[in-house]
Image 1 (cartoon, helix red, strand yellow):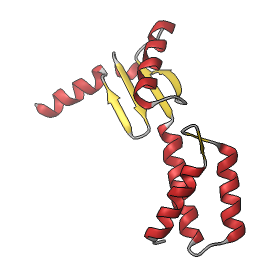
Image 2 (cartoon, helix red, strand yellow):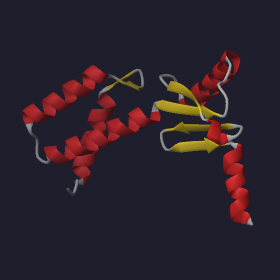
Image 3 (cartoon, helix red, strand yellow):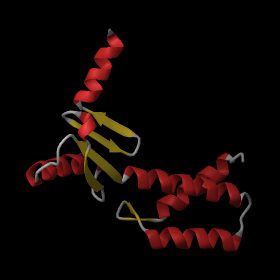
Image 4 (cartoon, helix red, strand yellow):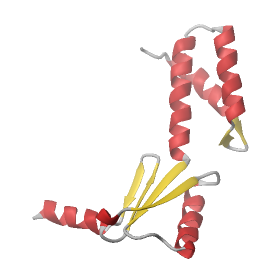
Length: 130
């Protein structure tokens, strides 16, 4: 489905209006979708499709996965949480997961951003260079 520029602008404006204090509000998102469906403005299919994309991107941006070779202690988790909150803002949902395949180091994924400081990644990079 081709989405017009006007539909993109409308979806972006609706997305901005569905935020409270800079964070997406679930009840406002539902309300916006219900209003668009009830009114059925021109190109409402494109508006809803782009609005859905914006909501999905924001949800992905607010979820972080931190993988480490061994389980992290509370002090390390708090330090990582503070640094990521400083970088990405409040409202970030962090999950910590041990992954022995990393051998050592950390891999942090926030939305489409991946920070890979694991030994596994460094070995793979070394292998590619040889």
